Length: 76
Image (cartoon, rainbow, N blue to C red; front, side, top):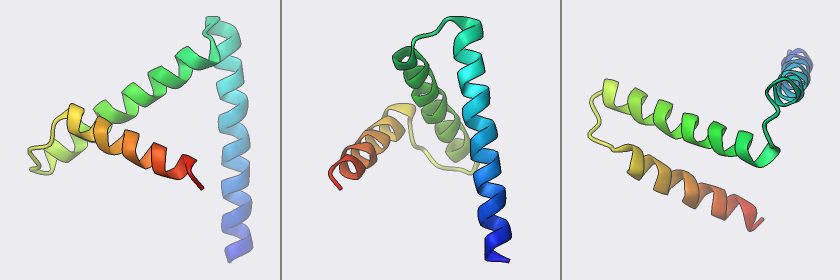
């Protein structure tokens, strides 16, 4: 069962990467700009989901948490 899950994850990651490359080519967006758009979308989406579940968190707070996690994961 674990190997099936791993295979599915690998396949979906490959599809996501190919779609990402295709999007960059079609839109002419630099990798840095695309990364920033993804970051912003992630923060806004996460903040919205948390507020829907009753949390009083702001997008700024979500961004701070995201930045801290990113900083810590970069130290490994």
